[in-house]
Each structure stands twice: as structure tokens, then as C-alpha cells.
Length: 73
Image (cartoon, rainbow, N blue to C red; front, side, top):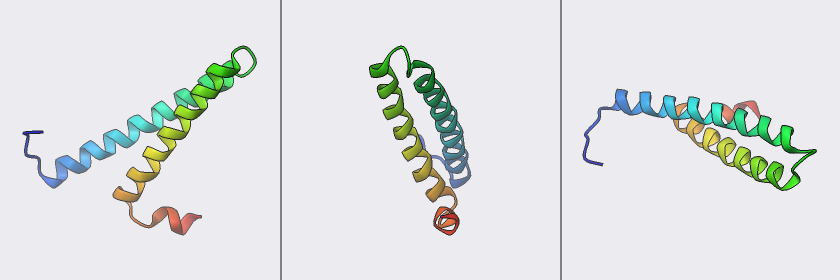
């Protein structure tokens, strides 16, 4: 990475990444549900991808709003 970005741009990029991860998580969750009856292996794969995106969201949430999740849970 050769670009130098300021903190505001870095925050914008992280917010976009979190929004994108949320969209992907929803998409994979729907796919898992749709495949459950016809393709159990595909449904499992989609469920694993859903968990991966959920993890990314948790990490980005903690970076962008530290401590908020621990207060909720």
C-alpha cells in the first residue's frame, strides 16, 4: 500500500467495509437458508461464509465503536 490516507479517510473506508460485510453476511445467510433442503453441502458452505462475515463485522464494530458490544451482551 503506497497511498497515505488521513484518519477520516481510514474511518470512511472501515465504515464502507463494515457495510459491505453486513450485506455479504445477509446474502450468504439467505443463500444458506435457500440451499438447506436441496443442497446440504452448499448450505453448510454458505453458513461458514456467513460466520466469517459475522466475525469481520464484530471486529470492525469493535474498532469503530470500542466497548459497545460488550455493553450490549
